[in-house]
Image 1 (cartoon, rainbow, N blue to C red):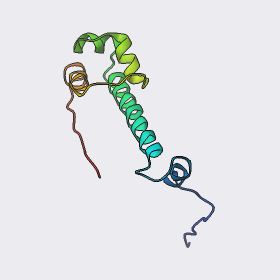
Image 2: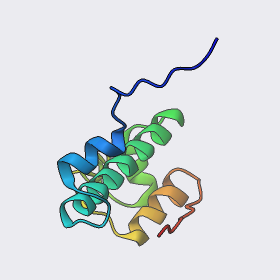
Image 3: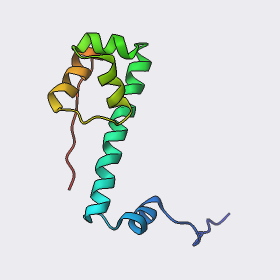
Image 4: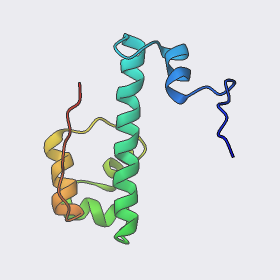
Length: 102
């Protein structure tokens, strides 16, 4: 069976290009930055839940409070790199690995 290309489909990148502009455009870069912050919150929440921890337990382990953990998980707070590392290392027992792309 031959694969057919559906020309009526639009990729996610094309949708973003149309709504926010191409990568490098101010509006698009703001969206990308917000998305990464959202993604970070989701990753932390998933890790915490996987370890069977409450927000309060995680906060106690890394020296912060439950409301701060909640704000991070819900993308309502900026987070310093040092605090992120504390949450990951002391709170979750993990390691932070960063990647830089151009």
